[in-house]
Amino acid sequence: MPSQLMSRSEVLTRFGPGGVTGFEPAAAAHPIAAGLPAGTVTDDTDQALLLGRLLVAGRGRLAPAGLASALQEWEDRMRAAGSLDLLGPSTRGALARLRAGESVAEAGRFGATNGAAMRVAGVGILMPTGDLPALVDRVAETARLTHNTGVAIAGAAAVAAAVSAALEGATVAESTAVAIEAARLGALRGYWVAAGQVAARIRWAVDLMDARRPAESLEWVYELVGTSLASQESVPAAFAVLALYPGDPWQACLAAASLGGDSDTIAAMAGAVAGAVHGVDGFPPHAVETVRRVNDLDLEPIAAGLLVLRRSARAG
Image (cartoon, rainbow, N blue to C red):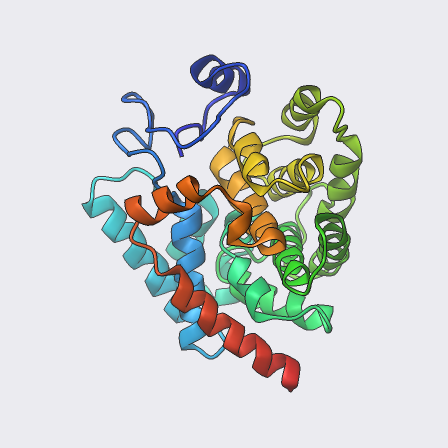
């Protein structure tokens, strides 16, 4: 939260040469997070939980109108609370087009940013990887309203598939391999936009990482892979950080938060996959306690509901 929208040099200046080392409050002059206490979640977590609740309520299906209403209500609550951490450009534009009378399929035709990927972890909990095209179809269903482009669906499919594979016992490397295949399938959905291929860029970003040179590797992520809102940058960046710290989910999150750019989203995606691989016990107890104390989150009921649906899907 406190490092989002900073350049990498600004992050290292503010938090030290090692980057972010734990939860910190936002600076008073932060453009969107000023005044937030250490451990406060951002829109990524809020919208992931929002989508998870809708999937549980819909028995695994998603009504576009329900998603549109829920996203608008979420932003209205944030604005009323004085927050500047509101809907991203793709989601805001899609909802405006929907209100203007465009169809669901058309409303999201320009959405190429990472909004679908940042909120998609629940689909990974819901859908097993045994039928990967079906998983990608469900991802596309959740993305269609706001991010109905091949690049955005590919990014979201990669994150969801990696989470799902991890829940089935896959390592970070094995989950990443499934993510790459899902991204290839996802790129065939939605509208085409000119963008790098997410699947190829994940593989390339992962291959750039050198565990013997972590600081330099993170510079490569920032300078070469990219840390913007673009799906073809931020999603590969998340998998690069996972490859650098496959055995330490907390360090992966800290490194992602230290990248600069859309660091909260990159950390959220990396954390979703790393958490699925290692479980809650992979994180320091003090970090877990801080998140629970600072935020009013209903993580367990949503996860439990999605897992019940997952077991039903697997049995079917």
